[in-house]
Image (tube, rainbow, N blue to C red; front, side):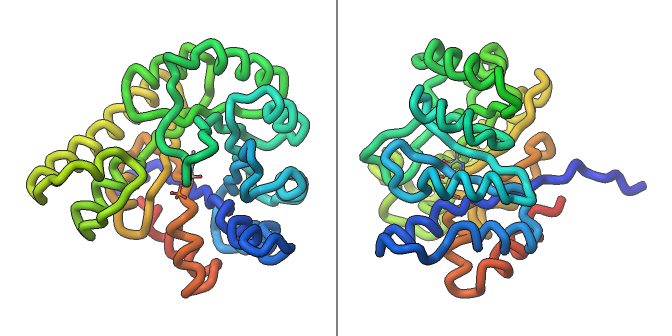
Length: 267
Ligand code: PXP
């Protein structure tokens, strides 16, 4: 008998469209056009990050995207009172709280849920007065999952960056990564062990989160090669993917890039 596996939704992160625009500081390419193409091509959600330094998405982008999107918008943001005031006014479908450092190229890891417990709680208490769903971007550990539940989040998004970096090091001998593990001169055999552990950590965290009533997303560094192992984890119900889709879209067009990723998200 065929049993339907729970489907996995695809959230497309379109920050990189704004990164390209900001390279010239003009109005082209417009993230709003990307939203329309992603929605037409099967994306289930749009993800954008309103950074404190506004290096890509601006307040006006967020406002236009949230007010006109035909699909839910997941707004990533820092635990910062000024940003949270803006987020509350924008009223996206979901807010994903992420750690943010000015100097980083991209989000480098999950929230320090233990160390920032009170700050996260204050932020959640503000957001709870709105209709906005709350997600915490966390490292795949049982402790971070447990604390997220205690804090009252509805969602966790598990950080897949460590897995993605190990995958890149194992299969393409990528000499750089934004994680400290690039210091490590590991053999392929050692990388296989670390890769398996990184996957197990994600699966254990996802299963535990699901078992205590949290909805589970995952993302960071996922691409057309490494996504399959994550898709096979049944308790993960959503992936947020940006860089690899936008990179591919340069060669194939955004619609094809989204459709291709969506087809890899079928279980
Ligand atoms: N999820 C979160 C919380 C992120 O911060 C990012 C990057 O902005 C992504 C997913 C997407 O990561 P990537 O661009 O590597 O696919």
